[in-house]
Length: 272
Ligand code: ADP
Ligand code: MG
Image 1: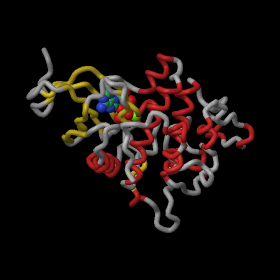
Image 2: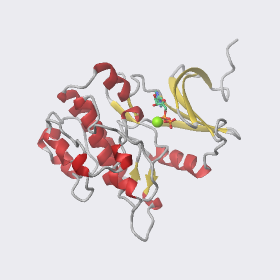
Image 3: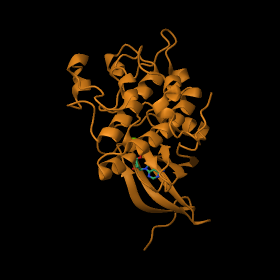
């Protein structure tokens, strides 16, 4: 027998993905038949008995509610019970950028550039609103039926009000090993715009090359000196501008002015 619709509104369908606290399901809005994706967050992770702090969930909701952008996944509504929170989002049909890269082996230059342009457009929009994603990676970037990007999973994102006023920097060490900017791991504090740019650089490299820019993904975690890394050995000039040093790393403004980046840039508007 089919389960009854949750909140009398949505019929849950197949599981699309899951993480430590969240499971994402395809669902159908029974009023209009529309497909949606519902991220169900269990406040308590049964397996390790950790509890997700309310402020983390509230932050993700506040951030998602503010964001309206063609390349960012839309939140329709948030529903809650005592133990679970349900994010009802637009359903993004094409799956993860990660799966697409894995299936194709790598992307050609034009496709990599198009995805990168849309990613930078979305990230620039977030930064202009004082929001840092902090977990940009191909698993958190979805593709719609037209092959356009939708940045998702703002579960680790931060806002400017989290910046500790004494040094103007963020301090939480977070992200995913292969995509995390090196300065995050130094625990000295970091600028969220620069760390997101680093992750975008790794994503671009992975799209073009089909593999990571480091021989060993754990190199970053082990803090091996820069000279020993195979950083950005890629044909595209812009790649070498994603400097390991945040002070000299390319900025979004510079990326947007770069001739390689601008090629075929017709339809994307950038927030000033
Ligand atoms: P987590 O915090 O557990 O990483 P995510 O928000 O990244 O949760 O979602 C987990 C996975 O669920 C994603 O990697 C993706 O495969 C799938 N998913 C998430 N949101 C959607 C969506 N709106 N449409 C389709 N699939 C989605
Ligand atoms: Mg995720």
